[in-house]
Length: 385
Image (cartoon, rainbow, N blue to C red; front, side, top):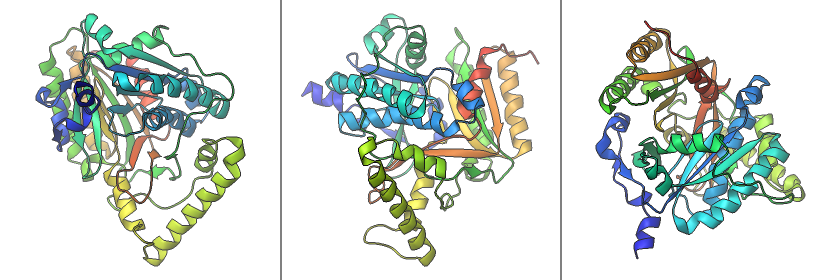
């Protein structure tokens, strides 16, 4: 019974629905002591981005989440998409399946995407021995989808340990493949409607009290919330229908070579059917393309908290200047370090178990480097104002 309760940790968390709740410590609960953190990222993601491989980078990051959730067999684990990587928290009952999934997804990234993906499994018990924690909150973005928010510093510590070569999961031998059912990146890039798509990362400076950083997060969220749809890059009616060629080919390669012709045909038929139904204003059984597109917008994760604030927002110049000024002040006061990257478009990578249910999930990043480029700026000291 205790193990069953532990396995259902995330699904039993209370939800909050206003994003400013990410700054409220009362919304967070510590992970059970016997849980694990799966951390993964792409080595030299900035190099891949400089080469124009934005979609491949995002696909690799999202593939970690897809592979683990499919291996475990359910979708109520806490996870966060980081653009060029991901973090998933899991109970001990999922450890064996997750280890195999992480091994296989590294091989997939290397052989199909030509990217070096590394992965690690870190015990929560070791994180607490290091004096940190992993606390999780549940932010409900729509009636059918909730995303995990992470605080406590433990997730960042796990990533740092992975980058130092500790807790690593070895890649699978040749021939292994993860189950990436539902993973897709069919949508065309989403153009800015207000000025620029801006990816922002703000993390607390080490050794600082939590209060000033929480105030900073509340201020940035409030400034961004003044924009239409609080800066959401996707219009309320959903993204424009279209099938991106690069996305199509990337999705085709999520299955074995023997199944790729069938996979390509299935994707093309689904895309044509969705487009045709939308143009005619028709439905097919329980599938309504208008509602599906609206759900895509509602279910997107354009902002999150992962040991720091991460947002990819569509924002006009004056409002962005106010956000930058607030971040500069906080940096000069030793409250935070931040990175910010501008681009003209956003990218969307999706996990859609079935289009007939409304719990499909959509990960937003900037289309020209996004979070990876913003994170690269965190390494430099912030100038005093």
